[in-house]
Image (cartoon, rainbow, N blue to C red):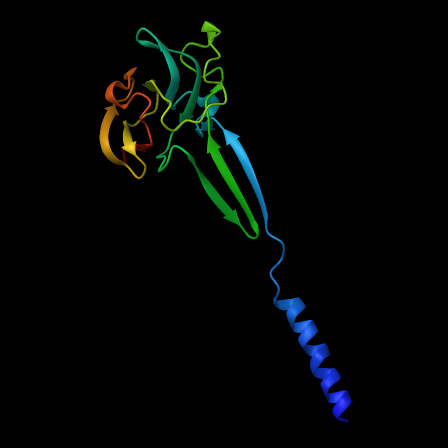
Length: 161
């Protein structure tokens, strides 16, 4: 009787441990230069990697929302975590696609932007630090130009409400 009782406890413990063990979590990293939901990226805030005099060239990042951290973000859905890393890429919505300049392609967005263009319907402000802190420069609708003192020191951007 004692042997059967201990066996039953051991069997129950084995089943319980199987049921209580978390499933295998999966993770993925996605490199993206597009966080804009606008049709064909027409109404977006554009950050460019390089400039030619006062005009952006070649590779860019676009968004039409606030970006808390220009490094990227993580999204968890069930047991899957997806990390989005923001980068510069050559796209048809970059300011001067015809330049052929590929400098910066694949580079991280954070602390690498030189120029901005606001084609969104709301103003965007670029900040020195993540979380919308520090020195800032605001771009009104249809405004564009150099990031000035924030050139290569961009860490977040906020869309006005």
